[in-house]
Amino acid sequence: MVAIKSFGEAVSFLTSNPRVILVPLIFLLILAPINTYVQKDNVLKSLENLEKGSIILEEHGANEELTSEQLRALLIVALLYMLFLSAAQYSVAIYTHRRRLGEDLGIGDALISGLENVIPAFIVTLISVIILGLIAVIIAVPFSIIIGIGVIGGSEGMITVGMLALLAVEFFAITFFGGAASVIFPAYVVNNSIRRGIEEFLLPLRKPKSTLGFGLLLMLTVFTLYIVASIFVFLPLIFSRSLAGLLLGALLQAPVMALLHAFTSVASLSFYENLREELLNQAQSIMTDVRTY
Image 1: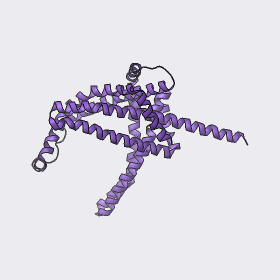
Image 2: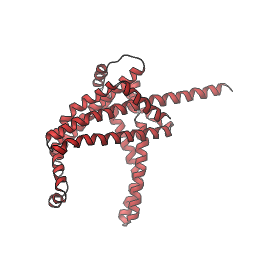
Image 3: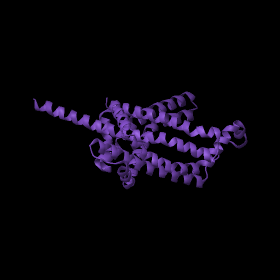
Image 4: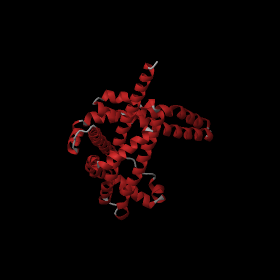
């Protein structure tokens, strides 16, 4: 199966080329103190409220709303993350692709290449997010109508059924189309064309079982490593609920997140290349069969 083969190749490549993890790690270590400083007040206040439990909720309600300045700062940090990690993904993908072709490309050269192509890489990342977002919204429409009818009619059963159906279908859709959208970025890198990258989104749709399987493996990997990263974030906070504790947690989290970004980048590239190879072999096989008649 293409999905399992791609994940196996990603594990093999990272095992033999562990230096590739340094690329996203460098960017994450740069971003860690910036993100920590921007979110320090909200995070520390949330921890303090959690400690006080129900008393704080009774006196002041839920968490306070973000101010416009805080929201603006968070949006800037989110933009920086997308820019830096798009550059990192490009660096990892181009390094992996060139190494598999037998070319001698160094990590430093790959890092520079990622920075040089950060804007188109960011655009491709943004397009992938928009595609998935639109799919999620479109799929949610009919179930939202069912939930809305249940709310108007006061039917708790209809609301429950609508919400459960929405969650189930959204999970399936995001898993499947997430697997499909994962080829957009590597297709852009391999073909050096944003247009070609978007067009290749249709490629995984011709192999639905493999695409769903890859999406499931991708989600499982992301979920698992995010849990591990979260543990590293909160460990220092057990001893020191301060800015220093938050920063230390962010720095400890960075290697795990770097592994996640490197692995998913290599796996997505492998999935794209394996899909293309399999479909090409099938096309050649059909042409051979036709010629025999």
